[in-house]
Structures are given as structure tokens and as C-alpha cells.
Length: 517
Ligand SMILES: [Zn+2]
Image (cartoon, rainbow, N blue to C red; front, side, top):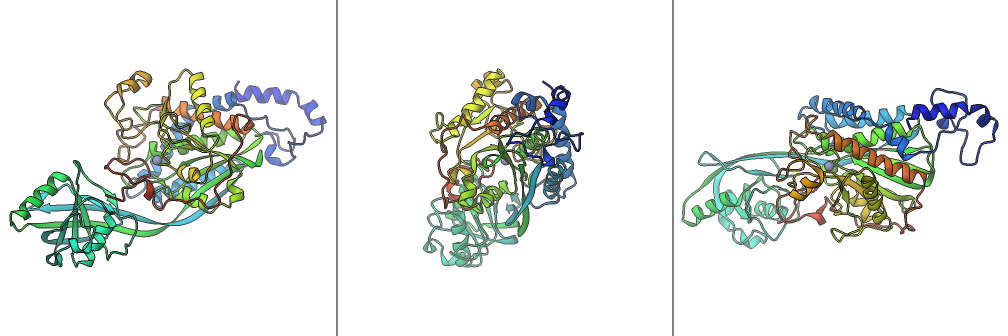
């Protein structure tokens, strides 16, 4: 049923409903008035999945995608990285749009985080070495001889005296990159080159602006083949000179989460939905995560026409791409009492990938053996059953905490979510289930300049926006489908810069940073 039909039906019954005393769950505050009838105290209809879903159109999504693209295009780096003009415009737009609805309590939550932007160019004998940068590395231009560091450069004794004033050539492995760079600085090296110990390129982060081992020096990474070639030349007694040109910007930036909660529904029992508002430096981030942001804003615009039994809270997180910083700040600063009001958290990060799958977070652990707090299984089932009802296939998606639900999981709050895929290649089986191209990345533009308005799949975008709306309508009516809630952890051990999820290999997922060898 379309809402216009629904409203007509309600209005036709006005003479009766106005005369009736208000039921206890319908207050007389103006937020519950039907739009267009000021002064008449009609209760809004209780949210219904099909009515809410039918209000969401492709145009709702595409017009907002154009808005975000415009914000990115007007920003110097053509991106929406946190604290940039493109990102600040996104945050302001979300806040203004939500306030305008006059149906939510909306606020900006400020926090300050370190922003870092790095690039590296390394040449040897005028040949470009295809070097990669390390986040938080200082900038500088250094042309000097290379000196091989013993072992993997994790102990001061690995650094020969000859490294002083020169460029330390260090193998990846065993200890954090930060330790190697700090030890190189302590040994008097002017710069460092860290080469991969596995095939392929290497990029990572120093994890912060300082380390106890010593002062940072400019540093870049090399792939294994180039690193091995330089090691062989030094071992043969050759003198090898490298030229490093490292850009390193590190600054504190104030940024904002946008939080909005329905004025209807029990505020002590909250369904919380969230998505991040920032992009990476490389591009405008229209799928990652314009798509989740747009889905939630569109639903908020439609949901204002309804009342709910349970409160719905929207969280638009900043600085996800720098390590889930906005969501982490939010959860960390919430009291235990407030954490316990969150019945379940839904995370929507990348829902319109061009070569998509319909991925549903595996909160049950049935596929990936990581089981979420009580309610996570039921959240997964709610979404899988919904897609089945729409005759759409789904695949379980890893429940590893590598997006903004990580801090909620660590606070022992049930989580659910959707993900249409990033750089991983589509399998034959997935091509059979979803169409698209096997052997091609689910989002070939993931974390690249091409993650723009031209690389969204609108079938997936619309289907996922409606699936999210289904969870909001279902939980907005009640939590009957969920088991008893577990208590939130009073002092969750929140990760620092996502450190505990650092892993071997150079493939990174959204929000993940490679800290260690
Ligand atoms: Zn993302």
C-alpha cells in the first residue's frame, strides 16, 4: 500500500479518532501530528515494513548519490576523507536534512583524531621502484647510500654503525613497522626502506605519531622482488644509492558523528542503525560508504511518517577509514546504562557494489565460526528470510568486526549488517547466485578514485535499502523475535587503531590498517 492511500484512509476516519481519548502510547506532542494537518492530533500510523519499503525509490538514492559526488568534486582531493571540505559538507548536509524532518532528536558529537596523508616515491639509478607509503611517516627528501640491516630490524643490535647518516634497508617481519622505523632513527639513519618478505606490494601504517624505540625517519616500502634485488647488490659489495621523496602530513582534525533518534518509541529499547560518512583519500567513496549513508538518510525521511514502539537511532560515523574511530569514540563515551539500552546494532557499509553479492553478516557463526552476542543470529535470520521472501539469494559475510560494528561487538551488543563486497573476486558460484562477472572484483573501484557515481549498482542499492527498512520496521514494532539481551560489557577492551585485527598479507578491508609484519 502506498502511503498516500494509507493517509487517505486515516483522514477519512478523523471524526471518530479525534473524539476518542488518546491511548497511553500516543502523546500529544506535535511530532506525532500528521504532516499537513497542523493542530489536529492524529496519531501517526505504526510503522509497517511493506508501507515503509514501498516509499523508497531509486530516485531517492540516485539524487543523494549526486549530492555526495558534488561534495567530493568540490573538495581539493576529490574525496570525502574525514575532516576534508567534502566530508564536512557531507556531515552538515546529514545534520540539516535530519533536523528538517522535525521527527528526530539530532545532535553532532565532536571528537578530534589524527589525520595522516602519505605518499612515497623511491628511485635507484633513476629507476622508479614502485614504492608505497606508510601512514604517519614523516615527510622528507633523502638521497643516500643504502645499508643492509641484519635479521629483520627488530632489535637495536640489528642496525650496524654504518647505517648512521644513510638509508636503512630492512626486511618486513616479526615486529611492527613502527619499531623498525624507530630503531632506524635511533641508529642515526636518515631514512628507511622496508621491503616485503612475501610476494607483492606492501603498504601499512606506523599506527601513531611516535614510538618508544626512537624518532621516526622518512620511510617507504618496496615489493619483495625489488627489495631482494637491492639486497643482492649490497651483498655483492656494490654501493647503491637511493633517492626518497616522501610526503607525510599528520595533523589533528576535529570531526563529528551525526546521531538522530526517533521521538517515538521506547527510548530504553533502541534499534541502532549506522553507517560511516567518510571516504578514503583516494576517491569520493560513493559506494564506500555513500551507499550506506544514503540508505539510512532516505529511510529516516520516510520513517518520519510513522510512529514506532521501540526507538530507532541513526548513527552516521566519521573517520571509519582511519580505524573505526567515530563509532569507537561513540561506544567508548557511552555509559553502561546507555549501552544496555541498545538492543541490537545494524551496520550498513557498502551496499551498492557494481558486481555485487547480497552479503549478510554471519552473526550466527554458521559460516565463519565467529558468533555474535545473543540476538546476532536472529538478526542474520531476519535479513536472510527477508531476502528469501523477495526471491533474492544471499551469502554469509564475514563477522570480523572490520567496520563500525566492531566497537559494538566488543561492548557485547548484538549486531547485524549487509555488505555487497569489495576487492575480492566474484566466484563462479556467486555469479550463478547473483549474476555479474565471475573472476572480477565485487567492487573493482574499492578505495580508488573510481568509487564514484558511475560505479553503483542500483538494483543492489534499492534492494538493500529496502532490506534495511525491513529491519527498522520489524524492530520498530518490537523485539519479540530476539532472545533475552545479554548485559553490555562495562569496560569493553576497545582496540587502538584496529590493532588487534592487523593481519598478514597486503589485502585490506574497509577500515583496516596493516600495523605489523
Ligand atoms: Zn566502508
